[in-house]
Image (cartoon, rainbow, N blue to C red; front, side):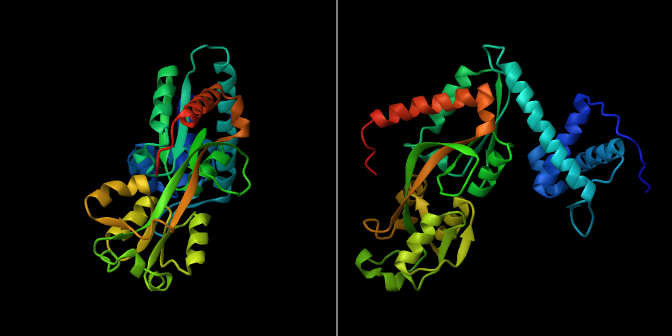
Length: 317
């Protein structure tokens, strides 16, 4: 196919903006098939949208076929330009929103997984407060690994992230939310399940396979202190749980997340008195997004809920 050489007219309608958003989502997901669930369109519809955009821009944006998906050099330039354009549109919407007492627009929130089972992290209450205070705001909820969520905030693809505290440099404003306690667990099919804690010495634990959260420095330090080495990695807690329940690996799990399986006799904590880790759960927002009243409203609700938490008695975990 011969691609036309033309000067882009620079005229945008809602349809062109949709094409740009579809292309960026495809690039973020790394291909058409992976983008289906993200965009809510079929693979053939996504392909047509990208082809329409290529025709409008007069350049080939990506290679797709048996060899896999890859952006062309022109596609990389267009991707960066789209990202800048969408940030500018967001800033425009933020300024217009400032004129209104009722906030409107699309609000993107990202979470690390498994937080929903926590009774001490007040996310359900925060989301309820936010939805009631801003009924015209459309919420877009994303679940991902800590690295995915943090990167999306840094690139301003998310307004808010609820993630893990760490010491890495970031352009985000960090608001501490709560502490999450994790213990080392084994499944009912593991030989350590029936052993007493006194039998499970460091030397014995070192003989077992362990699965580690890929993003957790605290876990790495705990393993190093105990002389343990990981034999598997998961960037989501659910992946850790799968291997622990399989009876093949030991792994750290948040106590609130493990509780249901523990009560059914499928998990047990190993030496909970001396093997544990504490993880800070925080709310993150890019500092440049603080001009957005939707972001400011969310952070104000987080602050109010944090004040209530501090006034509560200790949870006892």
